Figure 1: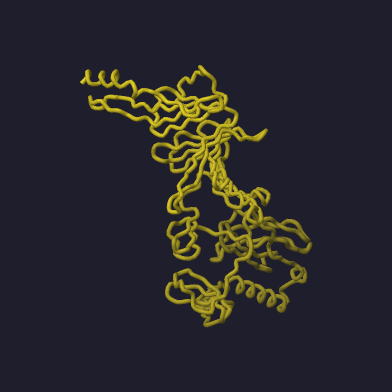
Figure 2: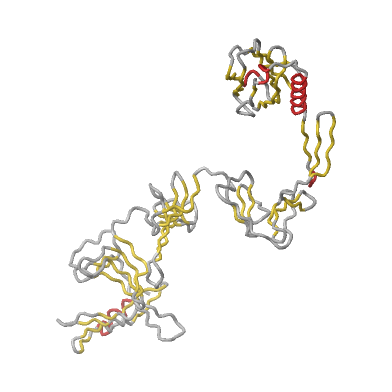
Length: 437
């Protein structure tokens, strides 16, 4: 086999002859290589332009280069390529992808990778240009920080981080944010919004409207503070709202609560539900069985007196118990005083004595009782008793004329009491006081 190859090489020198036509050098001679240990003759199609004005080469077959490739107007001989496989050296660097597809069924858009803008004072950048559309859909500025854009092996994208933990991960040292900027280029009013978060809160910021924060969630807020279900129901404190607005907890209304009148029965017959009846113009509440009107109708249904307790039944099933003992006692004292006065047993000096209602009443910490005792009275006592007649406290009054005593709240427990003015052994007047917590 070797001898056959050598025979072809040495006996066929005409195969390696080069011809020169009109300044072009054609290497029209075939070359020989071994393919699977068999000689193969290759007919090269390389056209090499020669001459002083010839600067182009057309290679019509595959070209293999085992070393680095240097390109560009400023490339000089012996330039060290280092680890670069391809080095482009000139003042305007661009890789142009010119798709020559002629059929309308095939895509033919032209693209370019451009390094730095060509205008004086332009950007130092890396750009992918849509040459056909005259647009720059992708651009990286010089001095962009490490990991400004990072895509990991799972397809997760990181901005500012080489370790994206979710599909889109934005990392920054102070309030990472996303800005939504309607710039007015389509004729609509310009408006900017920020969606951001930090150690204090997650928030939506109306940048155009004065950087107000119309929506905020505090860091550390519990689950289900605000939920929106597929039904359109909103829950506050619950994941399962049963109405348009379902609040689990107390509600504080700092202004007016407005209920839109309904001309049909409420569609939520739940115990405790309330709505405004647009026909009767009344509030209605559901008691678990029926809708009950809430109005000011409290007509007397029945009244029963048992001893001094008056039981009053009111419309809508309500009832009230009233203890008449204070009134009865006061009337009895007044009648006794009148009887004594009529019988001549009472002196004029007693008739001018007065006992006034305590204030405040009811009271919590202390209450004041005012009185007037004539100078002619020898003994005066303010007596306090419980509703069952038990003596609680006797307070001797030494001053005459107008005066007052203060009853400390710690001296009596919560409840209703009577206090009477007794002068010279005779009960003159009785009133009621109430102690609360």
